[in-house]
Length: 167
Image (cartoon, rainbow, N blue to C red; front, side, top):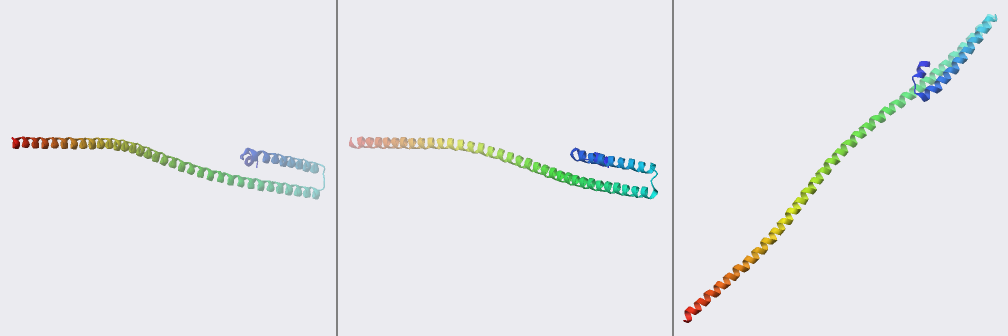
């Protein structure tokens, strides 16, 4: 029992070792009393009765202590199993959290890349709009210039025809 009690956790071990010391001192007291009775030449029946009652009390106390110690050991084992299960759940949760964080990081990178691409497309659209506006202005200007040239040429042809036909 001493070895079993010493192998337990410190908070349980101290209480069990104190009880064990009490029981050992009770056992030593009983042994001293047995020696005293045997040395006093008491009658044999009384001595046998004393030995039987002392041994039965010691056996009963020892059995009771052993049973309490076994119950404490069982509770300790159950607590250890719960701690192991809790640690397992904690590790699984941590792995899941790491996986989620990695997924979120990848999604963030994808969103940042899409954002950059969108800004690039927006810049290209703005540039294209400016180019199309400039081309539209040039086309309108060229139409006016060509219309003016045609009008001047038609006017020149009419003037030439007028002068040729009039003179």
